[in-house]
Amino acid sequence: MKISIGAKPLAFPTPAWVIGTYDMFGNPNAATIAWGGISCSDPPCISISLRKATQSYTNIMEKEAFTVNIPSEEYVKHTDYFGMESGENADKFEVAGLTPVKSELVYAPYVEEFPIALECKLIHSFEIGLHTQFIGEIVDIKANESILSESGTPDIEKVKAIVFAPETRNYHGVGKILGKAFSIGGEIKKK
Image 1: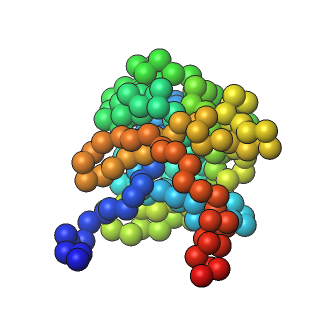
Image 2: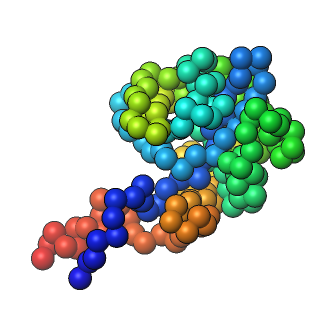
Image 3: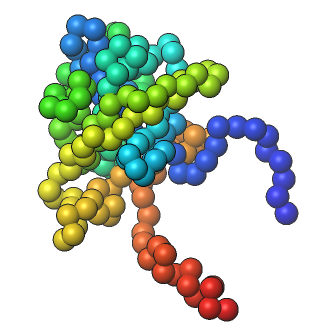
């Protein structure tokens, strides 16, 4: 039997993504977020939500662009750091020892060392409450060749992406394959 645990910002899994932006002076910034997900297939779009108090919020509103960087397990400490420090107080890329790369398609940096970067142009923003949701059209995805499958798409087991558990404030690795989508459900359908 289920019991009520109240209304909370809780869903499993939530991403551990790093958002790349430039400030008004052209300085790169990186910020970790957990509120986000794919929001449309055509055009390909992603949504992220940020508080107005963040440097990234200001940067996205001014530049109308951002990147979504997907870190691997190897960079979990860097990911956590990017969520702990304000871009107003430190050059987070320099402190973390990571490399900002200027996108050629949008005015935002991506993290060279992370296996995947989605370059996004802002197409909508919505104030929801404490957070503002930004919808970005994905104009390109940069991926390290080492994480690509034979078909040329990212292999989640090679990416070794991390996810965030909001209630416990822990990072987790992505687990094993459980079955082929749009296939294993056929076993139930046949019953």
